[in-house]
Amino acid sequence: MPFNGPNPPPADAERNLEDGPGTVRAVSRAAAIKQGYTTGARGLASRSVTGLTRTRITPNALTASGVSLCGIASLLVLFEGRNEILFYWLAAAVFVLGSLLDILDGALARAGGKTTPFGAFLDSTTDRVGESFMLTAIAWVLAEHHHPVFVAVTVAAVAGSILVSYTRAKAEAIGLRGDVGIGSRAERVVVITAGLVLAPWGVLPWAIALLACTAWITVVQRVLHVRKQLMEASK
Image (cartoon, rainbow, N blue to C red):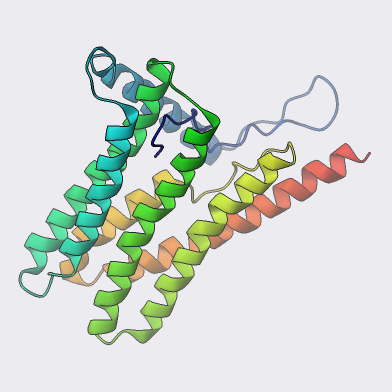
């Protein structure tokens, strides 16, 4: 979420180009579904900010609001001991709202012609900040409930989510595609939100375990995809 306008993030869906000229490999069902909802979400975001382009609201304001809301949501999680359903559900709602602003700031920047390379850099950076806020709060709560194994799993989830972004950035820095995989930010937001909503019934630790697994699987997928591209380029 950028402070001076993000660049449009490419869809986290694999195009699956076949080796050899003029042939195209069939896109897997999962990749097709992912590409479909990513495209749909972008279109909805673009239509949603049409009115905002005529106001004084800037991408910077949406960015600051989004990361602030994610921080507030993480603080709400810490009060779960007072009323689990109230504070977990309120945290989930605020977290979703902050994540939605992360989509809208990019859409607003594109609609208003305010995209910049520095904005794209800040977009990726602040995405990790908001997510890390929430996962840190969840780790704290799990420690208070004496779940040391799941605290370690949450740390692994934080590392995995950061590496998902890092592997993509490094791939694109050398001119390759690194946006494949099953655990992009959109999926992680869904898993975290579902875990918070179902936390009063003990689902949160397992949601974080799922998050960690999908994040690390995505890291491996991206490493292998980069390796494949380099091998094809060397032929």
